[in-house]
Length: 553
Ligand code: NOJ
Image (cartoon, rainbow, N blue to C red):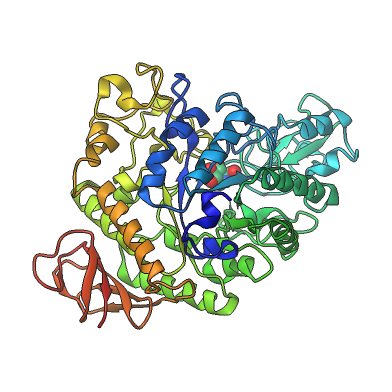
């Protein structure tokens, strides 16, 4: 029996209900082979660090073979390991080690699109218009007309067969969502759809062969013992039948989240019902967690009893420091929980969004608020996800323009690299903060800024007041409160804002989380403070930007 099955964790089928998962962005976690890119060897070597935090598992972003145009979210082989990250043997070692340390392992699956290097896409290109191979993707002949030389979706150039894209959809990364299959041909007038970059063609989920293909992908990883999957762009697999134009306001087509033609089609739910059935064929049941970037009421429909078990609370991920907004979103999520039964899946950071330290105000103010926010996060009912480096209070980095590699930067002028800078393990800048375990001089794939060493893990491990110490303490206390049933898996959350902008989330009759979001100190309602982001200077008084867990009675 593996330690996972014999520990005091929640019953196997429900381990995820109140789990905390640590998101690993492998290329920035630790480099084990000395090329400046993090990899499986680095993760294996550093896994005890994650286990010591007291989280329940890890979610690894893609390490499968990929041209790395979108840092692995352009997959060319769903059932392999990219040599950049290591080998399948190393993955097997990692999985075994994780389980022996009591950590579950979730992988990313990217079912909306693959890489243009994927063999099935290459076969589709070669097979030509109208072929069954092309029907695996969205290949559509462009209407005859003027060519769209400037790529803005309108014909302005020279007369050309298939010269304009089939509809007005825009890519999430900027520019149009269509590219010509064979730009040099006058007879192959097909365009293919890519909601992201041109190197990421969208699968055609209306073709049943696509669903069958992904069933095999799920089974491959579940058979290996992987505990669950995070589903990329889970709400966008199906597009509106016939691929009609999207509504435009003042000539601007809405993005993915609110574009009715591109996302949240009813048919997508059938995929997750099917996947849940597969996940439940395994013991323990495998977890499905969706990147469902929709407002709470719509996102909650993906966590109905026979679909995914979790969907990230995106409305929460993006909040600014605003108590009314937190309370409103919290109550919306609670209403969704009551309707569909699945508790919210909280996160404040991930590899796509600006680090909370910077989002909440930068400098000392941002750091204080990020500490308060993570304390609040870990006290909320439901599951929570931490992003690597969040436990260190890492700020967003302004990566020099010449070093930026994010395709979103190139296509749309928004750069996500600042949240993906390699972790500082040591304070030694000359040795690249210990990022590479075998070649200390290896330059990390993204440059780290001056002063990165102040956040180093090695330092924070020695400082009782560090962010790392705080997060570790919160995680330990969370486990204790779960064990003593102060925290129950079915707790709800009632949110309100008290005088002085004191945000309160009542988790149960006995326990509440409070965050001082105003500019003056505020007194907490009665109870004993179990944990706070900063020590209290006076009994039950929170200074601005402090947060506390309070037990009544
Ligand atoms: C969401 C992922 O988190 C992001 O990094 C990626 O670029 C897009 N999906 C496309 O796969």
